[in-house]
Image 1 (cartoon, one colour):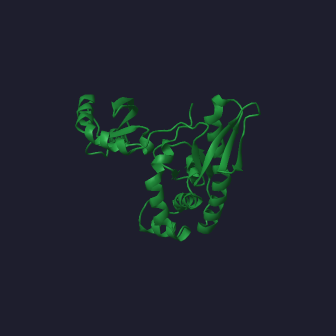
Image 2 (image 1 turned 90 degrees about the horizontal axis):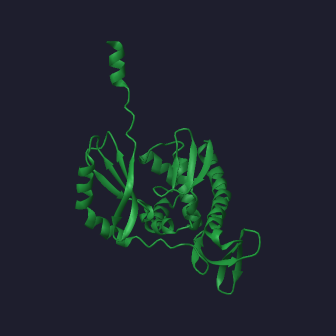
Image 3 (image 1 turned 90 degrees about the vertical axis):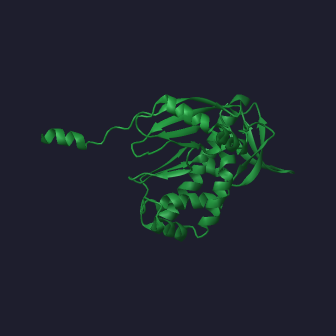
Length: 253
C-alpha cells in the first residue's frame, strides 16, 4: 500500500510536443501542439515575428478537436499575421539595425570571410567579406560576437548591483522570448537584441539579472528591475512594439 501511494504522488512526465505544418494566410508555418496538465482550455499563440504557431491543450485532447479549434480561429490568425512584417532575407543592398542604427549591407568577395563596420557618405555600413553564400551566417555570427561583448559587460554591472552572480551566459536565436534566467542562475539572451538600441539591451539584461533574486514577475521583481533600469517601462514598450520586426529578419540561407 505505501508503495502504490507513493507512485500516485509522482509527477507524471509531460507529453511530448506534437509538431506539424499549418497553412494560413499564404504561409506555411511550423505548428507545435503542447499538452499541459494545468491547461483548462485550448490556447493559441503566434511566435514572435510570425515564425510559428503554438497551441497549448489540456490532457487528452484529440487531433480532431485541435483541428476544429484551428478552423474556428483561422480568421483571427489571418488578421494577426497580416500585421506581422514579411521576413526579409539579409542581402547586399538592404539595411539592418546595429544597436538601433540602420547599417547598409555591402558584400566584398575575394577576401577572408569576416564582417567589418565602416562609414560612407550615406551612413554606417556592414561590409561582409567572403563567399556570398555565407553572408547571412556571417552576419549572424557577427551579431553574436557583438552581443557577447556588450551583454557580458552589462551582466557584470547589474549582478554587482544586486549582489548575485550568474552561473553562465548563453546566446541563442530564440523566437518566443528575448531572454531567460534559470533557477540555477544561467542567463540566456537572443543575439538579435543587438539590433535594438543600447538602452533596450540594457533593460533586457537588467530584467534577466533581476530574476537572479526574484524568480517571478511580482511587485518586488518590477521594483528591483526599475532600480537597475529606471526607464524600464519605456524600454519594455519599445521591445514590445518593435521586437517582431527584429525577429522577422531572416539570416539563414
